[in-house]
Image 1 (cartoon, rainbow, N blue to C red):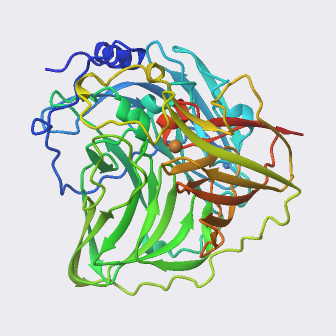
Image 2 (image 1 turned 180 degrees about the horizontal axis):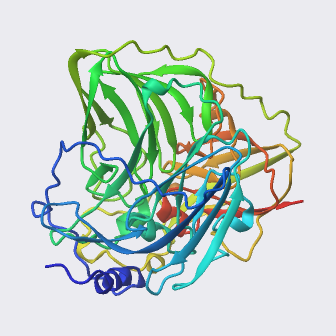
Amino acid sequence: MAKPAAAQMKHDMGGMSGHGNHKMPMTGTNPILSEGRPLKDLPRLPNQSAVPGVFKAKLAAEPGVVRFAEGLDTPALLYNGTNPVIEASEGDKVEISFSNGIPGEPTTIHWHGMPVPADQDGNPSDPVASGGERIYAFDLPEGSAASYWFHPHPHSLTAEQVYRGLAGIFLVKPKDDPIPPEYGDTILMLTDLRIAADGTMPDSTMVDFMNGRVGDHVLVNGQKNPAMVVAFGEKRRLRLFNATNARFLRLKFENASMTVIGTDGGLIEKPAAVDELLLTPAERVELIVFFDRPGAAKLTTLDYERGWMGPDKPNEAGMILLTAHVSDEAAGAMPPLPAKLRSIESLGNPVVTRRFVLTESMGGMDHGGISMQGMDHSNMSMSSDSMGMKFMINGATFNMNRIDEVSKVGQVELWEVVNEADMDHPFHVHGTQFQIVEHEKNGKISTPFYRAWKDTVNIVAGETVRILLRQDLPGPRMYHCHILEHEQLGMMGTVDVQA
Ligand SMILES: [Cu+2]
């Protein structure tokens, strides 16, 4: 029998303060999650405003209980008891009355990728205390239609609040959508669950802090390998959100064809057929999947080397995330996908160049020299700073009271992000969308296949990625690694955008 949620949460929340002797769940005793159930839609947050062009709702972050495995209650942190979807339109005014019902912890809501004012964007410097309330208010400008998401961003607590369940989807719809409505519009929110034999989520270990926390099960809308039924010849619009703390998802659709139509910041210019794609933490992709073969089409994972350190390297390949059963009955006539989806102008010539160098330090030892072989991980749950692991940008860990860069509203900048670490780091910038100019590794330069708006880009170990960006709203903005444990251990900085 599960303990009451609040008591359980309190117990679980103690894990990062260093009392540390929680055991890793034993292999073989892990709960089995049932597969193949019909794919559920995440619940929509109802609009409480009757005024056209206004979206108003209440959101509460609070402890709750989720049934992931048969007969087991999993204490979690949720928004209104779930992972809600907010759907609004370009031009709308948004007003979210937020309350923090998490016992003993501050939190914030960060509107990931959205062009919201800095003081409405849930910065760590704007916490909502436990029991406190605030209103997040912002307008959705023309051209902002995209697949965004939202999650907490409090100082030193983001990683834990997110893996315990706090995340939601924010869809901004365009006034005129070029994608045929016959394709539907399906949200697939990918999360990563680690669940112990008693149904609880174990505390993070040192390996989790090093690599980012990877779970036992990658879930879609909270379900393991859910099923959808499609007609032979049907085309479906699928929006994939990587809402995991640290999973690198190299994805393939077996027995169906994938075409990319959108990225973090909305539609790309022209559809781009792909065989596979890499979706790193916090990234989104919009796909048209063409079910052009009978049988079962499966969204599966392929192997990816992202520079794992220490033991417990997860097997990335061969997970089945979603199964589409293709019926024998042919779909009705499907309108074609337009050849042109939108225009994306280049941001133009930068007037400022900034350089950000990403490095790791493992407790004073050279990161290549640390040996994790044979370490007993029953005792590896400990406070993150006790091991002295650091993740840095330009040699410094995050300091909330320090401005690292000073910029100007409307100024086009070239950011050169250099990964001198041994792991990949997905780099995210708040408050705007950027354009990737090029990737450089070992002197070899490659340019993206298509122009796209992005707010998160994976920087492969040893690679330099150059991006163009412009902030249109003033105020302090964070930039950080979206492996949330790395963000927590310092891989974050602040750019102050001046009016
Ligand atoms: Cu990182």
